[in-house]
Length: 108
Image 1: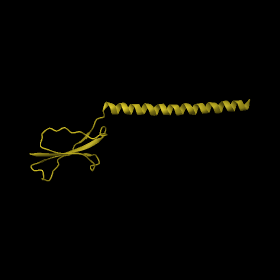
Image 2 (image 1 turned 90 degrees about the vertical axis):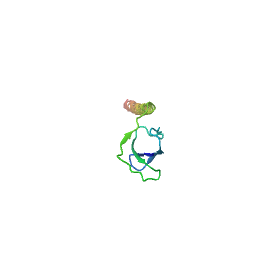
Image 3 (image 1 turned 180 degrees about the horizontal axis):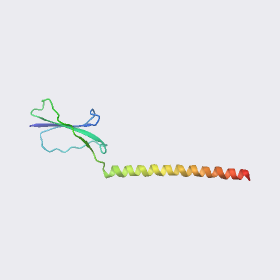
């Protein structure tokens, strides 16, 4: 083996997110921003010449794990959404109390 072609695609099988032709046995791969928490398919083909037609073997699927920053942002979003829904519920209850006060005052 002189060359290896490494291709990473989204699980849709069409969207290519990484492609590398290399002669090295070990390579560092930097996934694009926004890849964490998503699944991908990796394909590799070993070539004698760069112009050879790649023949990909099995295509394992892998997931990029979420980072602690991703988890913290998701938790922060959830807290914000919970807070907003609680504010809306408090406002709804305040309006209901005002309506009941007005109804009681109207009867007196």
